[in-house]
Image (cartoon, rainbow, N blue to C red; front, side):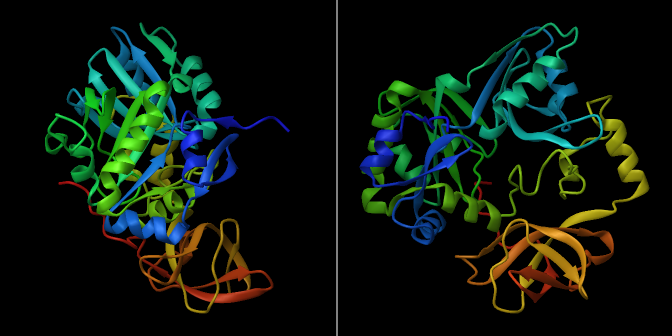
Length: 368
């Protein structure tokens, strides 16, 4: 087996007694103190995550904006400098290459943040679709560490480590060259937990020191080191998708319920024709929320049934630490997507009762 890759924060994982697992070829902590404790810390105070495994690609050049506009489903032309956009890259058939964030620094300079498990595939896709666009592209994934400080006390904790007024960074905006505890950082405010918070991109050599300073600054405010387990339960409660679960090559953004990030009025983008056709013809399946009515925890990949007939599959399922109930997301045939529709979830050898509910499990608390 290939040796797992380690982030610059691996010594911090050991120092804070993280339980390290293999995640997309990376040695990353699934938890420190415990998933529920870390989840609750993010909801009530703050949690600090190592997300250095994420990929980053820089695009510069006279036609950088036009290139990115053709590459993604959302409308890049509406962005101000230092504004960020959530979007998808799609295949010509409408399936998803990846979901990503597009940071616009200037008209000629963009920074794309992509999923860890997809870096090689995504970068090849981007290069294969450069065509005649006048751009330069660099994969910065191996050169950048990233910390995510999330929770209602995130700004208060981080503000003590910088002279930059963090309240001036709006939701889905970024600021470059911010000094955090002596390190030069790119800071953004997007989040993947349903809470306010910041992403901090910095040089590997500074990562561990900044991690320690943030943990120190947040000690009396309830901060906890947080792992991948809490990151997944948090994003799931906030109905934020995960590639490989709600998103994939055989799932379109429309089926996943993210049509608001697909701008079919744009001149063109890869996959537009297929998505336009799917919208016109109507969806045959879609992702819904569900709540268990019998005692059982749904898991990714479990079958969804109606009167014993398979009608779909669970994309994500958990016991919700915030709501204290068993809930999930599932891809189901469109006839079973209405709120209140009874379902059964095949959990081991039993088909347990569930019903379709709103996907808005948790009200997000982002900075307005």
